[in-house]
Image (tube, rainbow, N blue to C red):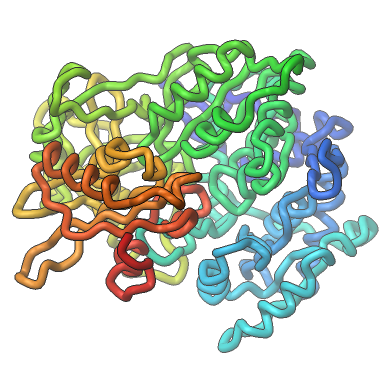
Length: 605
């Protein structure tokens, strides 16, 4: 039944396109690993909560199988096929086997987090009320927090709590096997909430396995000696993919907590180096802030040997920061980091994760475009020294057998390359819809093209009646590569002219060292006369608390006026940590705007 580790070639059709066989699910991938490399390490967790050097725990594929079956049996006592099972455990091996166990039981896993996560209480409350799980999986370490949270979660049925660390292996014998179809929902991925309240995205087994194969092909991870290293939250789509990779090729992933990385980013660097020095290839991933933080605080101590020569590093943010790439590359090139290691990528949770990435052997590419042209919806390349130049990083090429078109969001008509529009997607890695939101699902996942280009259409391989995913992201194709300048909902329109907030934010941050780069949010509010006016909220940089802010504010206002032709109606200068961000570090501009309007964002600087 499980002939061996998956050969990626069996997932390709006669044209070399990814078409996953109908028997492949996340559970059968794990069973293949158990059958083929059962005694080998599947996951390692480095716990830095007790010692500076960290305590390492490991679990083999055989142990993953036993633990998942034991959890599945425990879940089956309290839930029925298709019920939701929420994982509210701390980062660690229990989280992984809890997630796999919920799926093995034939349930829908809901990867979330324990209530101890600072600043995310409302997100957890929203997700739990929406998912209404029958069972919560957690550990004794946070049981009191879980019970207190459930006491406050009124108005919905109280889920049964299963303690992962008190579920014995012997319970695996009581597991009742269930048939899992690739069309079944594997898990609900709750979005980060950058532009709205979190919603549950239904990710099927077909979508999950397809995207894992697409990622392996895109970044050339055919070598089974490839291993992952990750500090990413396991409830995040990128974090889940990092534990998904080993199920395909039978390797292992080394994990640590986000807090361990933030406190000492050198731990991430050292964990990668340790694998490479054992002769292994390493894959990792992170947003802009991870590479920026590691470049600032993650350099090795004098005399410490670090080797990053065999690493592949996915950087996925919207938009990708070339400054972050340059800073990291400059910091770690002396430690063997290849210039092709960092892979700018574009992904969204509705597509499971990856949409595009930079190909093997390719360096990150930065191109410059005319500011006025972008505002008018045209990507016009210009020289970097042009005063009107706006830099954008290429997000690379589309995943295998994933189609994307650039569409006029108002008409639904396909646009030509070099034209800015909404990114629409079609492929087997697209989620099924939004949990319990039929109208929203139809609008987002059921879009239809009203017109295709008569020549060079990017929809040629897709049927005329096909449904497309509306991403809500703005993008354009140029020379076969995708560029993503921003989100449709964040676009700033004043007096009929469109402006990209990240462009304005970059100008503002460049105006004064008093402002914390990457922590500036630009948005509009009503001007009282039927129009919109620009507001900029920004955090102070570290060590500037005693500095007079007025010169910085005046310099910012002048820079935005001169470069963008926009008056700034108001500036809010805030302390560190005041700008709302998602769990993956993205600016929550809509939340910033809401806080400004209701007075909760802070006082004028």
